[in-house]
Length: 128
Ligand SMILES: [Zn+2]
Image (cartoon, rainbow, N blue to C red):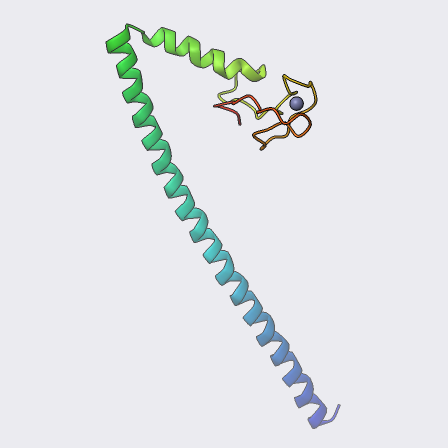
C-alpha cells in the first residue's frame, strides 16, 4: 500500500468513526430528551394521583360523617368493583362495549350513537 493509499484509508476510517460518534452522540441526546419527557409525565401523573386521593378521601369523609357509612362498607364496595372483570387484582380490566340494547348489534368503543340503528349508546361512567 502506497503512502497515499494509507492516508486515504486513515481518512476514511477517521471519517466513518466521526460519523458514528456523531450518530451515537445524537442518539444519546435523543434518548436523554425522551427520558426527560417521561420523567416530566411521571411527575404530572404523581400529582394527578395525589389530587385524586385527596378528592376521594374528602368525598369519603362526607359519606362517613354525613351518611353513616364505615370503612368496612368501603372495602366491601371496592372489592365488588375490583371483581367486575372476574378477578380481584386491584384493577378493572378494560372491557368491550357490548351490544346495543336496541338492536343487539355490537357497539363501537368511542361512539355516542349505535352505528346500526342510531340510538344513543348507554353511558358507562367508569369504562376503561
Ligand atoms: Zn343499535
